[in-house]
Image (cartoon, rainbow, N blue to C red; front, side, top):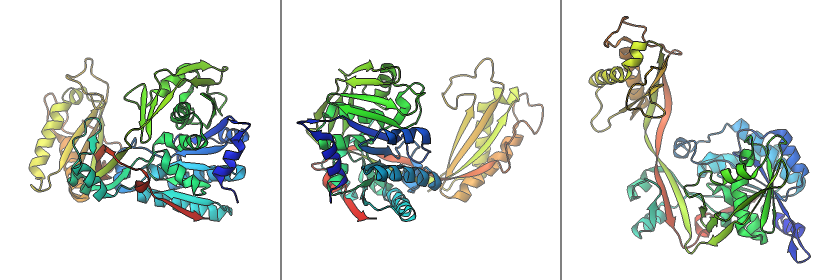
Length: 467
């Protein structure tokens, strides 16, 4: 019996050259809904494989640290069922990366449970591969000792304590892990934390397509129709042919233009001309973008430089404490004018009344929307905004301590005296009751580094099962 990748290879090879390869990106982030008309239109194009990314660090550290999915189980199930049914109907591979939003073992297991239930419920039979992305902590510590770990951005040097404190610790796999899963006979691949582009570049690389255009196309299509005007998340087809690829949104109202595609090539990149992956670097300095028609764009000229040293980006999140928030607003111009002194005065009183434990102090953070919560201001704007929204965040060792701080803050904020006050109460309004809310455990990223490795395969084990 032939495998999915063997059938695919047979369909695109012949006559001494590779035929055009149609790559279907089903979802820019699986679990948030896949528009049905565009998805069905994509299947009608007879793609050679389907891919979808499922996560990133974009939603913040909570989901990685807590081992929870960012998406609802209901939506994940609906999107996975649609993708699995479509791929099985066409007999083509399905590749999913960064399972469960953050790609650690709990996320991978939760996603696999849903996949198995879909197969059982729908009577589908296929070979399922899962790829773990959890980093062995002893391995990372040895890399630290060998000075093989470097920080990204403004992150400080990684320590063994950081490794121990991370509740989850993952590495971003590249193309190699997906390729091993396919070579082992997988029809459906569910991977832990993965490079977005690896989902879509692994198969072209296996089949011998030019890696520059293949990786550039992968970077664009992983966000589906976000590269179009107007941007959206509808299914997109990328067609790879020789040194070029064509982008075709399956929503006829979203158009890929040279400008929109070139702009999206810069998306999430510190360097506008280079994308660094575990196996090498995509260079886009000489990429050429041109019109195919009013709906499609063609790209050529990208090149690929194989890595002289394999690297893996590692990510970890640690628990900071339990969080509670207090929410209120005001339209009183005197409150608005004195907001900074009011919040400072209230905090001083609260800290006197709810003293922190020296060994485990709590933190308070104020955000006054309208006066610099999103972008800091050096002075009060003139004229004053007509209204403000106040958010006070407390992070403490326990949920009860955090709630205690938030409730005391509420009371003293409600009655705080300030210059020009006309009323002893009612200067702020609460949108609902209770106005203090438990906001789950707080985490922060404490591992955001690049690690040099001699081989990728040992870090990303593949497990196969027949459904």
